[in-house]
Image 1 (cartoon, helix red, strand yellow):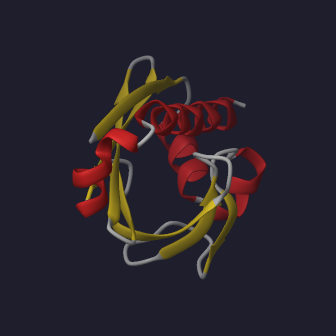
Image 2 (cartoon, rainbow, N blue to C red):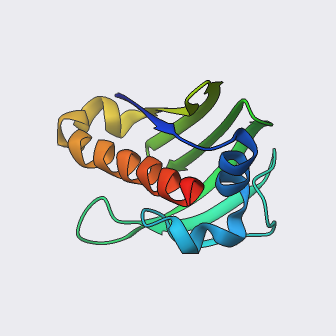
Image 3 (cartoon, one colour):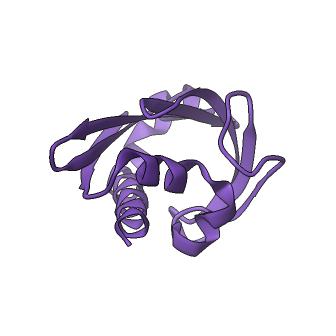
Length: 141
């Protein structure tokens, strides 16, 4: 299963990038990922984030591995949990109107293959849209 969403943020690249990568301010704007903890203040290659989110009634705890950080270009992170894995690539592209961020999240693993019809694609898509809208609001303020 693949979910792709994009958003235009009317701000300079440095502002958008700093808002996204500065983990110390996520609690101020990120309504999707709760209880965010990391050994670092900023997203960096090889880093890890622990957090929880609520795609269902009960929270799901996750450990997210930061696979790639290319400043002002892209961030890739992934998470695995009992037969389920997710990989998300965020691409940053500037134009005359602002910054377009595209999130492409790919879900895989035995659970996705065998029970994929039970995965709430709409709910997962809503979470990604909300994360991007939260980032937009924080970056434009």
